[in-house]
Each structure stands twice: as structure tokens, then as C-alpha cells.
Length: 82
Image (tube, rainbow, N blue to C red; front, side, top):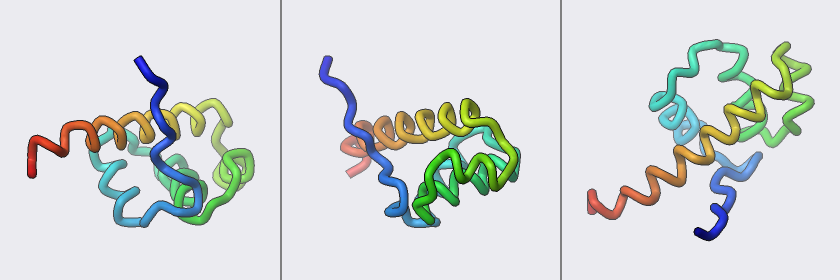
């Protein structure tokens, strides 16, 4: 199985795209959502977003990975909705 390409490029994700992706998850903490926005939409480094919103690097890293995986899964199944 080929490794997955990184889907979401920090600083280049549309805010509405991110909002909708988060809507598919159980992410509820506003601090985590804000850090994800800071990272994916504004392009801040994960460590900077973590410090700014008071969350651990591990937490944000996991959520970034989760959203990248979710984005790829949606892309993979989108062919069934065309």
C-alpha cells in the first residue's frame, strides 16, 4: 500500500473547508478548533498554535493527522457521489 499524500497544507485551507471537516469529527474543545484554524488557515506552525491556545503538541498533532486522514477518506469516497 502506498503512503498517503498529505492532504491539508497549512496556510492554504479554506476556513469553510476546515469547519466542515471538523463537523465530521467529535472535536468539541474550542481551544483545539482554534489551534487547528491557526495552523491550517493562517499557516502558523503547530508549536506556535499550541502555545497560543494552551494545548499540548501531542493533542494538536493527533488532530492534524485525524483531519488529514478524514480528508483523504472523503476524497476516496467522493467518486461514489458524482
